[in-house]
Length: 198
Image: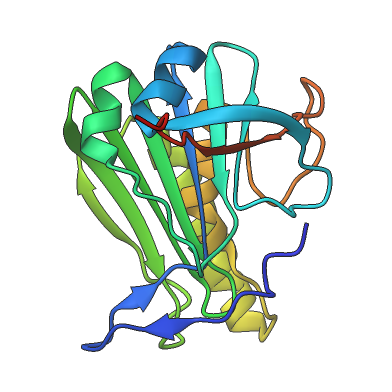
């Protein structure tokens, strides 16, 4: 699925509206998550990214929700949803090389990693909170690779991928890949539940 079809919109004061988001939930019951989202699973397979909001069950108790439509944003309350289990939220704008990962647990933002390459700073990285120690090695490797690429005049975006790679190391999923060592995720459309007429 191509995600560069969505256009960036500015909110003012330099803030960027991300054009693609996906949410990975750990140890969450699917039925309970759908209820919390106010959604239902239609069962329609999302083969080409044609649906606004989709969901897939992954191995090791992970569930991924993808949001594909910038023009129809869902009401996703990250703090509230993390009361049901760990939530790793990934926000992306490929065109500006901006990526952000946030981890929520028990209703609180625990840590975040942001790369903002919009101004051309290929080494930018902003880390907040206590990130799991496994991040250190990935950070050093990405920083070294990016420095070398910049020195050699090679276009590369190792730091852009760093937050997303780390999120993938936890959940097993990265948005730009279709197959993984554990298999291929099957995303199905989810849609808002329409209240019954009274």
